[in-house]
Amino acid sequence: MLGERLTELNEYISFHTPGHSGGMIDFPPFNVPLTATDTTETPFTDDLKYPESIIAEAEEFVRKAYGAESAMFSTAGATALVQTAVYRNRKERFLVFEPAHSSVYNALRLSGAEAFQSVGIPPERAVAGCGATAVIITSPDYYGRIIDPETVKKLNSAVKVIVDASHGAHFAFSDKLPVSATEYADTVIHSLHKTMPVMTGGAVMHVRADEYEDHMSAFRLFHTTSPSYPVMASIEGAVRLFSERGKALYDKVYSDVADFKKAAEQYGYALFESDDFSRVTISVPGGGKALYGILTGSGIVPEFRSADTVTLIVTPYNSGKLGAVADVLAACPCPRSERAPHAEPPKGVFRLEFANESERVPLSDCIGRRAFGAIGEYPPGTPGIFPGQVIGAEEYRYLSRLLPGASFGLDKGCVDVIK
Image (cartoon, rainbow, N blue to C red; front, side, top):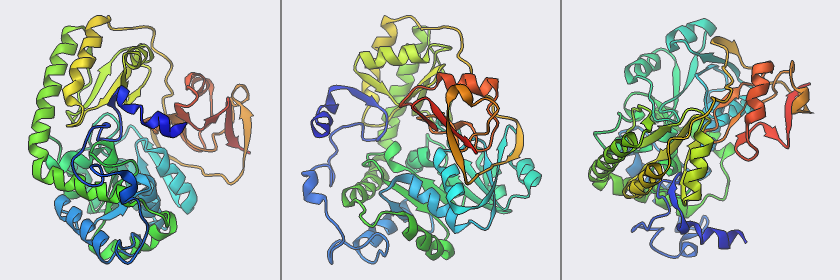
């Protein structure tokens, strides 16, 4: 049974989302039976889509903690907030700067917005190249790398900028981390459950005060009418905890990560440089799958592996267990093999094509066809192939190595292509 499996999760060490890492957290709703906090809209609990009392007060606290003009909770993840932001701005001409999460492309398709993709060129040039009036930027990316805040700030003064900072919700609470995107962008989406002690699905969007009502009208179209109150409570509780203790908590994480890096390098492993020290990516050229298997076989589950890397999300709730990862690295030589094929997206700016009709074909028959939707590894959920992109020999090799259950856009060996 699913419920029984969930009760067994403490048998392994988690370096993946959610950010509480399965640990014991001493604030509501974690410190009471879950069913005691699972409720619905009542005269005592407020309404997420029309917040006036206790939810409004929680959102106000979170707003102040991030130094933003507003805060809008979601218990349906950042996806509902991406849909909200795109739909609210659907009359704009969008530029997706560098590959984004698959939810961005789905939201653009649903909204009917005109959209372009840029790869490998500066954002100002990309905006000028397609005449964009709105830009979607992912910062930090899955590996903790950020786009220069001054670049984003400059863009934000010229066009509408939506920053998907899903993996940067913790930045506001430590001076050792990058600056929070709420300090330099008008529209920022945080997926708090990725790095903070928040239950899965907990996310927040910050927008300008004069745009709040428009966004709320769009939000009501996409978010479930049955929001999770335990998730909302965990958002507020986590932000309160990190506001009070975040600096000390991340000072400890910083020290633990530094010790782990020394050990990993001693055992012959290299680590990617990242703007976010708590996002630890181990470089294993051609050996990502092998190292991931070794770690999971040792009861340690990373967030993600690519052909050449293994990534750990390190939080105050698992940093003390990095020694267990170091022990595994010490016991096995760095696995290396021939690098697997990658799909290299075309450089430049090109239009995203969201066709209305598709057909499903076997992977063996997809060469020369155009992809109906985005296709890639999950996690991280960023595409190697974009909507409308022609699938050539290189793209076919990339698709052939995607694993069932660890990808999106592939289903039972078949691909949806434009009819």
